[in-house]
Length: 238
Length: 131
Figure 1 (cartoon, helix red, strand yellow):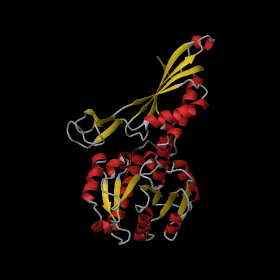
Figure 2: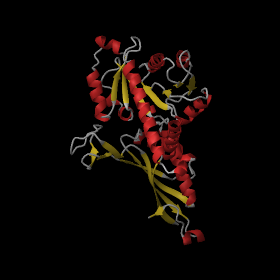
Figure 3: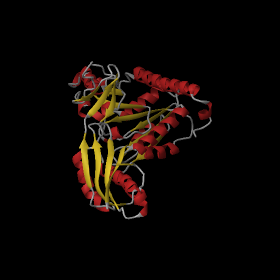
């Protein structure tokens, strides 16, 4: 018998990551800008989406997938405003790409400018699962403490924007927007902070403009790439 | 984060490679875990202990190498290791950084035992690199 060492040197989740990238490419080609919305439970993800849908008021085509362990309460809250599908995970504490793809097939099959994926309320596990999104937004409410970003490094590192929600409560809680922003910027220097209050309908001009700019940038990059790509690849991947 | 699911994924991948090499035993599986991988080494070992009896070569040992967070600074082009999660270049203070290592759970090497009495082994199989 002979001992042999096989060098593999591979990311164990390489295949999962590849599938998420491929899904993101499909969204890009469709012109659908996808946002993965994460936070701890009760930070205000669903309220943020309700207010966003009201702000855009059918000017843009939005679809929503909302993930929960149980119930369709969040989907029911959003149904008056947008096409929405509830993803029920049973016990899973985070959404995975496969469940998102199932949900996509149940949404009305039409063009969407934006797809919001409201993740399970959890600042830990969703950080490690790419859903094919273009943008990951973490919602941190003013009642959660401004010292949280450093405690959840992977979540804040992998988010490009932080919505500080429930800003109407700032006079009543020891939360410093500057401190939370500075803490988040230690781990993710490029993170953008946006303040909102869904109950007072404040901050939505900034939030919606940020999203529209992000989508425009995605489309510009997509179109620039397809102009410079060799002709063969425009007719389908090999 | 879900170390059992990760171990199952790992063992599936090891099994494919071990079968490719016609292994009669798997001595050691060497993996690497970084600070931003979302994986806890101790929980990984616990999960491995629970799951390895379902693995065809249950004598295998799991070695977990813990590495740091290595970054490349796009401003001054130096590589360095972050001491904590502060994403600032230690050389020039820039925040325009790229993570080189430390944000993944990687399968490094597998130490196998192969039966060298078969003609195929005498010719030598060249799947994967060999030491």
